[in-house]
Image 1 (tube, rainbow, N blue to C red):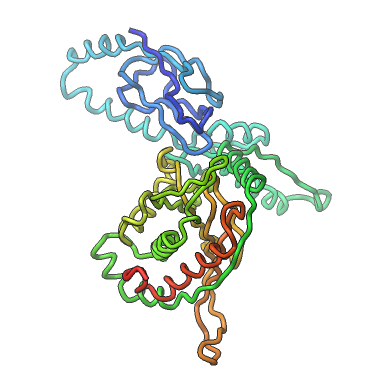
Image 2: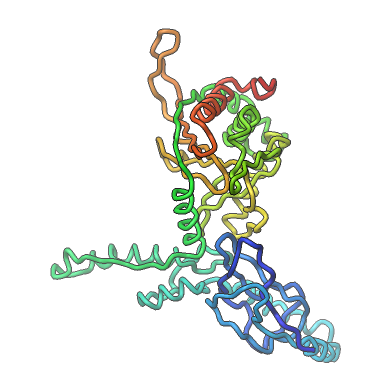
Length: 401
């Protein structure tokens, strides 16, 4: 029987996807649930598994095609597998063992060095051999960013061998945006156009949190199997502040204000495909260990391209940490339809005045960007102060004061 391979139903917020590279070619046999091809959306990369085992008899949409929900991609002959399997018992039981291992290993290694459509296109335009590029994608696949990185190194290598006649050459390179980067650009522009964004700043003495972490980090990791970081303290402090000032956790829907009775906190994470913001759902019900484990799991999934759409959907408030890259201060942009976002920054030792004395403390600047259509300056400032107070006296988080 011939069955159709179609694009699965995409979520309402995702209108189309891009086919990456087929893992099988026409004539290949596929097993049930074996991944046929990855589909890149503006949020995540989805796997398309075979619904039944059989022979891939036709590929209708090629690598790099833009497709929509329900679109026909390929056809599988399920009867072919049964015919192939019927002849298998004729061979001695031990004989197929060695040959069978070879295709499996080859299949596993086949993805290494494979260039994704955008990467292949850029490589073709620039005359780059992708077989010489170490891919950073899943299973060693070459991404567009890998080709761009190779191109960035090329002028430096060429310059060392070039003659004086090429000195001062002005080099440009044009790299197409990935679907994710295009979507990020669209949403950020939308946020600035539709929201009345203001940012308020404060600073926090990180010494109490650092002391608490240093005191218990080894015992914490031994007990919970995950490292104790700083983000969990910020999540807890933010949730405590949002409970005091619910409007910060609200959103605008047309002419209505929607107050959310739950706390779904988005955590900005860098990935090979760009910035993603997975959601900690019901963060108010999570322990410090739960938060740290969830963030660690999301970081691995982001690196491996395994984030699911449900991981990135929703959210009532976000936190971004520019301090990871050394940022001292920034004005983060709100992630619609949320109404506020907290920006963390680098912790630096600075001279501050305490009780009339100049002392050195590890200080961090905090930034809270908010939609002034909904949130007044008073609530925004008091929210940031509440976060600061909780971090400078972590016992507040336990006592809910």
